[in-house]
Amino acid sequence: MQLKFEKLVYGGDGLARLPADERGPGKSVFVPFVLEGEQAEIDLTEQKSGFARGRVEQLLQSSAHRIQPACPYFQRCGGCHYQHSNYAHQLEIKATVLRETLKRTAKLNLQCELFIHPSPEWSYRNRTRLKVQASPSFALGYYRFRSHDLLPVEQCPISSPLINRAITATWELGRTGSISAALREIEFFADHRDEALLIEASCARGSPSVDAHQSAEQLSHLLPDVQGVAIFELPEPNQFAEPKRIAGFGKPEIQYLVAGGSYRVSAGSFFQVNRFLIDELADVVCKDAKGECALDLYAGIGLFSAVLARSFAQVIAVEASQTSHADLRHNCGQEVKAVLATTEQYLQQVSSDLRPDLVVADPPRGGLGEQAECGSLDLCVMRSLDAGP
Image (cartoon, rainbow, N blue to C red):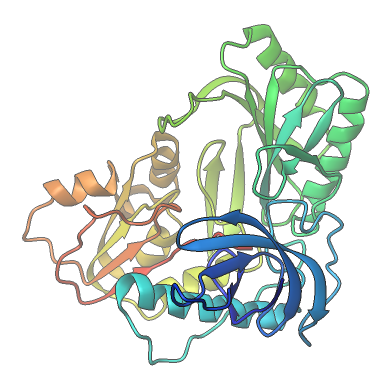
């Protein structure tokens, strides 16, 4: 079956349509790893009442934007969606998807220009989490595209050089049989200079304490750059409580210099991942903002709060994670009122007299939620995640 793709949609799939028939317009077909305007021979892999999914059997007409992906795992790995396009066009794709998403979900038809802040295309991530397989042989990697099967990877071109050295060192250690069979995940977090490394690893639930402590010590010697190791117990499926830390080695935190300040980021705390854009992100969110009161929701370790405190008389920062909240208090001190609560809890309890001049919201991937109603505001700055790197 030959189809021509109209556009790319959120998540990276190309959209085409089956031919119309006596029952009406043809249903939508979603196919990954194509570009708008391309024509391809398609094999349908899934049929639903309102749409279908497929895969490319043969590309018949290529886009001028198509390139050979630099990552050897692209299309097999579930992490990246657009590496078959040149980077300039990737930015255009994401801008178009953002406009269409806002129009579809918020009924907001943006008439203004979108200002794009490009990043270096490679080595930009300061954090990555990989799955660990102990048997039948050691493997380290990501999930395969749209599956929960492990794809072994020995490099990650979008991660920092230090993280890639850590991936290599972990493979070397794993091949000796020295990594505990209890280990399930390893997360590497590099500092602003890409010179200090924090390792966060997770063991299977119910793992003996000796295995966790052994893993912490083993990983602490992975590279000279390792500053600390924290071992957590994997939570129950669909459990949203903070992971339980069961072992550690060294200093389980990183000091991150960015946005004119120094921030403690402990194991288990959230931090922005694009190491080249954090300064710019803080500037865009907080630029020219000033007034009596600013409210920072989902404040994390206080990146935005600390910057806002320089130009607001009062900053209230709301964070639900105990670990991140402790970092928030450490990083902002008395200049910021740090509240340990979910955003929903805080907004339900806060006095109706509170009228912040600015609200900053940086929610997790699930978004603000229906209960996070901020009321009548002069200005709200929303920072949102995109699932399609």
